[in-house]
Length: 154
Length: 132
Image (cartoon, rainbow over all chains, first blue to last red; front, side, top):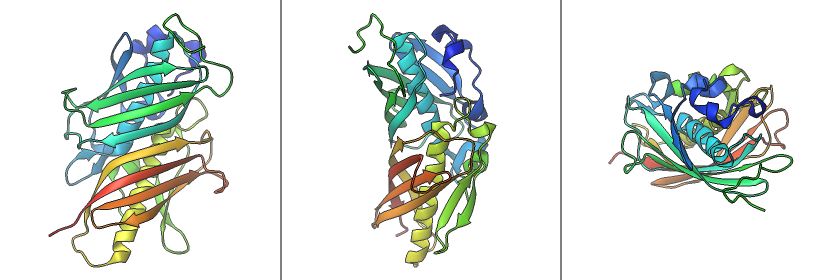
């Protein structure tokens, strides 16, 4: 996550230019809808983990999914709240195809008082043939997540 | 120790502990930044993965034998983020808890000033593809 939550409305995600590590990786917004959000990670030679095959390292895919699942929480609550990734689990179902853009799709399962639960997949063109599956939880270090009409926790 | 192109993007370098095991160091900077003043979780995860794979390669070398060295493929990883990563160098090590014939279980730990206060830890499973 590399947003300054205090200065950005959620609707501005689509126009956001990612800075920091996300910007270095070339992560950009792809699409969003009710309950889901997608980021894109175009393939680049300097993100390769295995020079023989050209397969991306796992780090850039984790980074993309960390940001995507984080955004999925804010996409659900409709407001930014500063939060931190508590844990992230990733299963690498198959290697990403060299030169293919990776799409990270994330959804928020539930926002409790101070913990949010998410899941997501990464694919390189066909969502039915994912390259990775992710489950991540987030926490607000102080205070609570904003409450929304869509049934966040009591 | 040869590190992948992605390690150069992260800006990491390999050191050696007294026992010869690899320690991976990642300087703080814009390229690994998340929210202002803190490391990005993905960059920390990437550092942990580089450390885990370096430890696994080191363990395979110590095991001797097989040439060429086996291929290592990640199966999964679980990362716990314990503290925010601040404006300091971050170091990470991998610990191979079991080196089997086909699967290796590896833990990794990242810290800044105080190794007893980790900023993140991970468990990874790797598939080992040996020739023949």
